[in-house]
Structures are given as structure tokens and as C-alpha cells.
Length: 325
Image 1 (cartoon, helix red, strand yellow):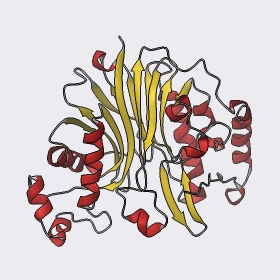
Image 2 (cartoon, one colour):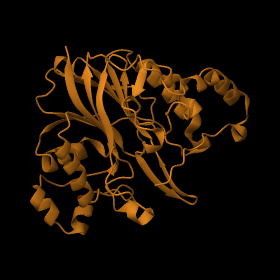
Image 3 (cartoon, rainbow, N blue to C red):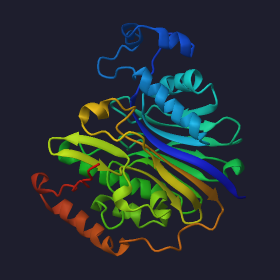
Image 4 (tube, rainbow, N blue to C red):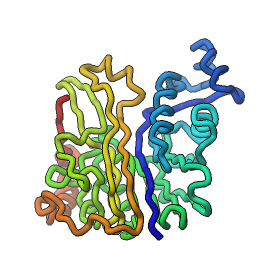
């Protein structure tokens, strides 16, 4: 059954919306900031700035997405409150509160009534964030959608060993047909430029939607970071489609490009929405050659051998992709 879908993936960056009662939007936005923040008892994870919450909601409503995969959501309570207050209850909420020591989870918003008979499951508690699978049923072209948030490049050895294990698990769990994998991969998966730990996933018959529509690698950015060495703008977020899923259009929703860290802090997140229109059961894109794929072949086994042979202090670290605005 063919089905056209409008999808998006977005890391909402510490998206907490913990409230004491069922406020209307007008009541919530009228609260003093101290009272709004006082409803969240955590001293580490404050409630999301209400202006940022409203801007995220505006994007979702303006684009009228069928399905949104979200990262860094502060639990089902936050997701449900966001849907009720800011999205008018237009979406079904999916989220499993597992596998996060920071209380940030992978979740999804599916347009209410769009996917009758759909099912959701949490896959693999070995992930640093939970891995959510949605089976969309006939209304969604019988697609399986996996929403991921892989280990970041922080912590011991910049999370390399953990990220390798997660990539391998994701590769094993992803169906080869009728599948979309999307979310924050916390690394570079652009063929020819990819960090080595992602190679086993990139060998699957999947393609990034931005590549499928011909957007040049240097124009693919979904994350803003300002560090001691200056700006680092890179594509960390992806929507990968199996070869039998046709990519009709795709883009990153980018408005104001920050010039410094202070301007970045004014944005709703340090990530951007990546979106696509796809058709399940279409002609697909798998017959087109993957640019630079020959550069990846064979290095995965060598990297694992090297990783096992070297001492922790000598293990290779992924090289970041630097892009300036």
C-alpha cells in the first residue's frame, strides 16, 4: 500500500515541561518565571523556556507533520503537557522512560487518527537513551520507524566504545525493508566523511534523505556548537530510509543562523528540524550510487581490531566535521 508521509526528527535539547496542574496555554504563559520553574523540583533540568516551547510548537503546527521523532524529552509528562497545551491535542504521544541517567528520552508525536492500529515498543535497554520503534500499520504504509539518540561524544574516551556497541545494535535491529531510522546520531554519517564507528550502519541499504535529494554535504547542518576553537556546524541528525521508500523532498528548517554562543542560546535548541516527505512502497532511491561509499569499505574491521589492541589512552578519537556559518 502506498502512503505519503511528512516526517521530522528534532533534538529538543533538555525539553522539560513539568507542571503542577492542567494549565491552559494562557494560564501557563501568564505565570511568573519563578513560579513556572518552581514546579520542576530538579536543580539540574529546568523547565524549558516557554518562548522556546512555543517556537517548537509553531514549527510542528506550521509544517503539519504526520510524525515527529524527538530527542531529549523530559519524560511522558513533559511530552503530554506539550501536546495538550501547545499542540491542541492533535498528536498521540509515545515515550518509554528507560535507559537515561539524565532523564531525557526519545519520544514521538504521531498525528491523531493518522495511523490506526499503530504500535510502539522500546527496543534494547543497552542504549544510553531508549530506542523507540513505531509500527505505523496500513495507514503509514506498514513502515517501521526507529527513533534513536546515540551516545554523545562526551565522557570516557568520548563515548567511543559505547557508541560502537549502540551502532552495532541499531544495525541488527533495523529492518532492511519498509523502514525509516531517524534521530540524533551524535556524529557524522555523510559518505566519504563518516566517522569510522558508523560504518556498519552505513553498509545497510539505507540513504539519508538530504543526500537523496542532492543537497551538498557542506549545506547539511543540523547542529550549532560554539567552542574554544570557534563555531562547529555539522549534521548530527538524520532521517535514513530503506531503499524501497521513495524520498519526495527533504530539507533542514533553518531560520536565523547564530553568529556566536549568545545568539545560539536564544534559539529553541542547539539542533534543527530535519524533515522529509516520503512514500512507502514507492520506487525508492536505493538504485542510485552512494557518493564516497568506496572510502568506507574495509575500515570497520580494522578499526575494531585497532580499538581492541590499543590501551584506553591510545584509542582513536573521532574527528569532528567543522563547518562555519
